Figure 1 (cartoon, rainbow, N blue to C red):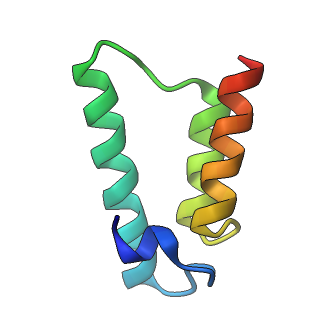
Figure 2 (cartoon, rainbow, N blue to C red; figure 1 turned 120 degrees about the vertical axis):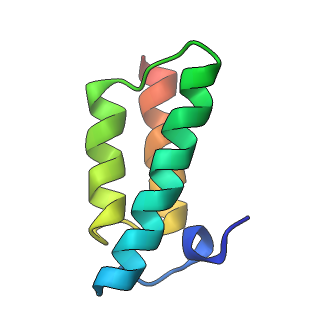
Length: 70
């Protein structure tokens, strides 16, 4: 797994945010190829991850919780 996704430190600089955005874009494209789209709730969680409000572990936990509720 990408090291930035495992980070326990928020993205605080442009380079870290760019790496996180690239990972999210890749995941979005991957699920899109499977015929799925991300919900507005998941996209909001992704935005929080990109800007560093969530660590990688927190991001995964929030996505799992959203999917289980959905």
